[in-house]
Length: 305
Image (cartoon, rainbow, N blue to C red; front, side, top):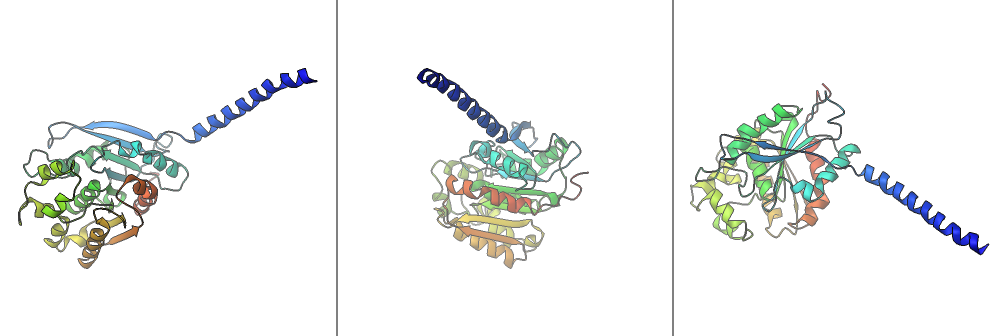
């Protein structure tokens, strides 16, 4: 009996190992990789093509006649076009869309390192012009989008939040929604520039130039853009702002002011303040609800066309 018992243990171990391997295989299948496509987009406004990453929705390959809304995502000051994938958010988006917790959409992430997603004061880097006149037509011509304002949004984190709101204000005909997570919507001033991380300050000065009362800082200041054109708020995309109340740059206070300004000028704005800092711990925890608030506002008519 002892011999038979000793012989049965390897067999039991083999069965348990096989079962574990099968479970891991099923689990791995359920955790499919997000569908990411990389492109280089040339533009007359820039000296070199811009690298972009496009996340296509789960049904994109299986539904060749289907068209999708588009969200343009602008990364933070330390990020790049791979930010969503690097921080696990592309996988979260893919899973949420596959499970029906999030409407399906294309997510376009352009590389904007050091640009603040706008034209530089000296005219050497016309990134804002690239976004408005090159990127959107390229995406609509390359992917199966719903090519209209009501099915298009722009969203960003921190520096990218500034870029998203600015792009929405400068090109109100393009977007139904402009959204910022911990968006850098503070006044452009010497004081606010000195509060920026040390490694971000050179890019800030390179893009916005030196501070003057009527110069490039005012021209690119979001509140000033609205105040200089009071009718703009009513034509602008709906604004969605979300921020942690422990944000070290006090962007919850600044965002609250900007939210009230937009409403006072006749625009649409929604503000969510909640516990959290200016960091990836907070951003990862709220990104899917943030993306959902954007996606559910987009027009999907004709999606199956």
